[in-house]
Length: 73
Image 1 (cartoon, rainbow, N blue to C red):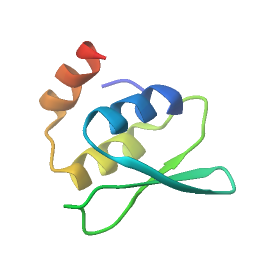
Image 2: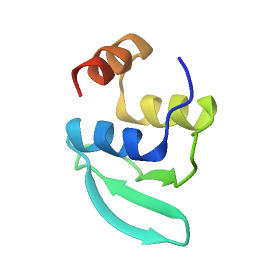
Image 3: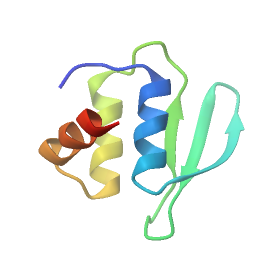
Image 4: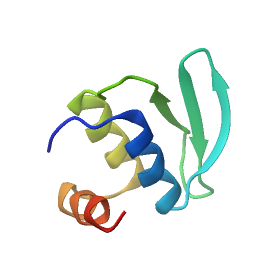
């Protein structure tokens, strides 16, 4: 897994059914009905691995599923 831009991760979140809710400062907030808490996406040029991994875990996906989805989009 490598760092990606926030715009690429935005496409990923929309692909897996998340809806853009709002923005506060340089953080975008996404929501999906089955989530216990919102996904917070900082608008960094390259997202650190820990941000990606935490958000993947919140979505209930594995690293392998995440990488397969990235290839599709």
